[in-house]
Length: 223
Ligand SMILES: [Zn+2]
Ligand SMILES: [Zn+2]
Image 1 (cartoon, protein in one colour):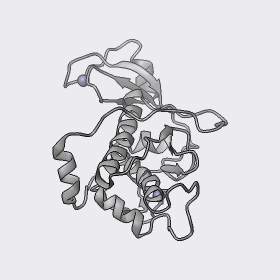
Image 2 (spheres, rainbow, N blue to C red):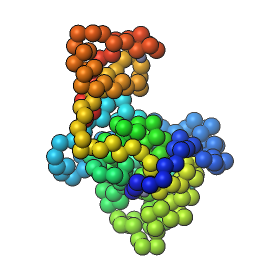
Image 3 (spheres, rainbow, N blue to C red):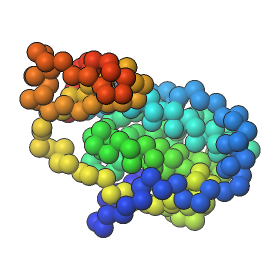
Image 4 (cartoon, rainbow, N blue to C red):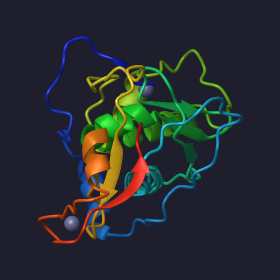
């Protein structure tokens, strides 16, 4: 679980030192890119915050990517975990060992998309992989395996990620509701966030992407 860090750290997109095994796998280009499956986690109560489709897809791809990377690096056969976007509170993600499932926090994902993508999917996959490597067949984490202990840190470094237990994502008061609307153009992964005023304006005025020159179309309400 990622928890809030009081002192901010800057290098969230820093990939850290890349191991030679990691580079070898990358260069072989043999990793599958079938995204992980999205599946509700038990019964989620209450209204869920929507995540734009393109962003969800990127998270699911990262989960599949790191699972494939672990399987190649350690010659193991961990199935790609299922995922959901229904985690609330301050943690950005949570790995569930028994269900082999990862829950992501949609509010933090929407508000810190880039840093979230760089860190959280790999972080949570590393939890599942650590259990698989050091306590195979177990449905719970044994006490000998600290959540962010040396075994987990080693997997993180092999992933080319900084073994940090905490994040400094903006926790932009999910309770104070400023509605936010996602618009998309023809670019595969660009998302434009409009406030209520601009969203209302977009019914009359047209907005365009500078890159693809396509008109921005309303996709989904983020919050
Ligand atoms: Zn964690
Ligand atoms: Zn565009």
